Image (cartoon, rainbow, N blue to C red):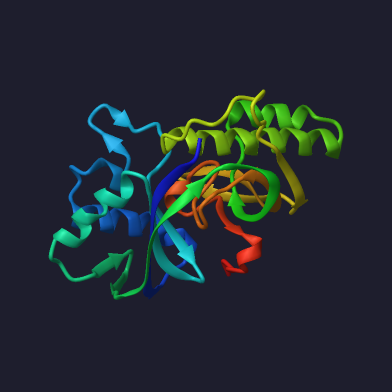
Length: 233
């Protein structure tokens, strides 16, 4: 089923370091109002366990917000606040202006051909899949597990934006990792996690700069389509 997914990327002129993105999210959520859950994904009952529809990024070393689906409507509360874009990020005070405002409908579809993507600072594992990864004895077996994990994360994105994928019999979701970096450890919320940079191909059309994997709301697992030559660095 073809779905035209609302998509919005807001790029600011302010530079940021990757470790400061959670502080950026907190500052934006404060301006928009904490009663708007999609800005921070916390509820009175706990955490909103669903694909984040407002995501905070470092793209070309600058601040960005990427919104999909309902997030493209919710982001209006940031603009309705009437407050200037003056943020405190740790010890830094930033005055921001918007450089990029890219609003469109992205056609989501499963194709017969493959599309190549880059993914950066990708956290593929939860505790269960990490143990399964460690138990694999060959590089090929580990790569196959990572491909299955990435395919599942693409499917989780589809579910999160309300896209009903075709059945396996109609058109299977294909995902192949073409290149995989050595694992790098990152500390996120006091947890040490393993991240990869990779290139992969899939027959699923995905919007540029969305995240896949864990902690996508704070800038991890950012993808970009290789054919569009839009670099993240």
